Amino acid sequence: MGVRRGPLLRPRYPSLENQDRRDEFLLFAYFVMKPYSYCPVCGGSLVERLIGAELRRACVRGKCDYVCWNNPIPVVAAIVELDGKIVLARNATWPVGLFSMITGFLDAQELPEQALAREVKEELGLAVLEHKFLGHYLYPAANQVLMAYWARAIGPVRISTELAEVKLVTRPEFAAYDFGPLFVAAKVAKEWTLTWPMTERS
Ligand SMILES: [Zn+2]
Image (tube, rainbow, N blue to C red; front, top):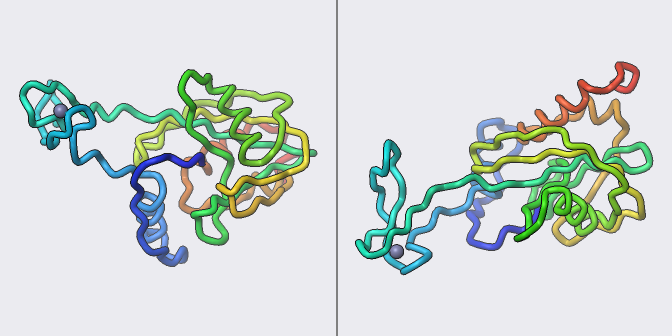
């Protein structure tokens, strides 16, 4: 995951043994941005206001028409395959044992495919040779829309400081991989795995 500038809630790491605590931890530790407390345009307070049929956070100052529409954040997610193995990465802020695919935010004026190649280069040091779009996936808890890709890459792995470690798994290992509380990653992985020939799954 690319580093998103801005305030993040950072609770203590709960035990990953407990599913509820894991979900809570992931929802609040890494992905959910603190909502704005003040209007980013004029600095006025934001208050809940009924706009259309929805309660929105809007600027309290009458002359300012700022409304927080809470539009979802696009994120690219990449299943990276290197020399026939799939790269799983642990974010530097994640607890030991938690791995996922490569994800990142788009830069301004950047197409998803460009972000895919850039993130794979930045986070793993690898060049993307070819890619295939897998689908869109909603991640409501983080208000994100994931654009998932498979990407075949080459090069020596050189991980960025955003990552703590990577591991390479075979296709059967990937097909059986437990993503724990990362249920969107698990969904992307499962649906991609189902497109494989049966011989590659086990
Ligand atoms: Zn305002």
